[in-house]
Length: 181
Length: 192
Image (cartoon, rainbow over all chains, first blue to last red; front, side, top):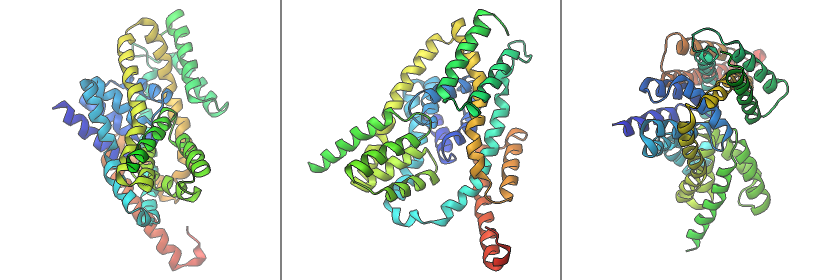
């Protein structure tokens, strides 16, 4: 039952993610192991999610859900990502005064943050396949675009959607017009 | 009747927030600050800060949690659920349309060329987003070990992310407990 599988996968993703990027490692392993998306589609969805409104986790849920089982799949995947908010979040809202000053919540994050960071760097490792060409060799234009993007993001402090736009234009030029690989 | 109107207002307000949440959840907190703290005075700035920090510590999407907490604060649990779904609706619709467009054009050679360029941007984007995360991630020295361990276990041994997060939770509790006791035991060492 693909709808239930989607829901359960995104429940796991929701409950083990603490903000933004920390969802990407689990999303990657869940959608790849179920065959709902390929590694390059994961990169595409991160790009699309960064350029559209809404949190990354929800946008990935919609994208992967539609790929796996159409709009009903997207709804189930979204509900999965929202499940911690609908359960833990609702409890925290009702008992807000008690939760507000709970030191253990802060303590948990002290360990979760570095763990997520380690996983994110790990995912970046797996996404290095983006720099290979169809023949399996290193694609020099892709590496050049990546290095340029890093400079634009970190040094020039250009916004992410602008960097994605520039990369798309360079991709058209290098791989479309010039036919590099 | 009055309650229904309050919920409808919340729905419209969070629907608008949902249309403009680009790149992370901080833009919505800024919008809430302007509307609720400065204009309508439904909460104080300090309360919004509390809501934000609790929303960030809970699992799931931060702004979803913030919407739930704020909605409950002004209109009970029903308010929380209304805020949550109102905010989620716009990105859901946008992404649904985009996904169908993407599927329709993805095999076009020009789209393939452009997307090859875009894919080259993903690792740098993640790296630049991970940098600020790295600043807050190493409060105590053992946190470095946690990060290294989770990296190795994930990439080399394919350990599931769920397990790694649980490991992180346990490590966080142990590390903080240790440094708290150490801090109390010998003030001279000045741990934390």
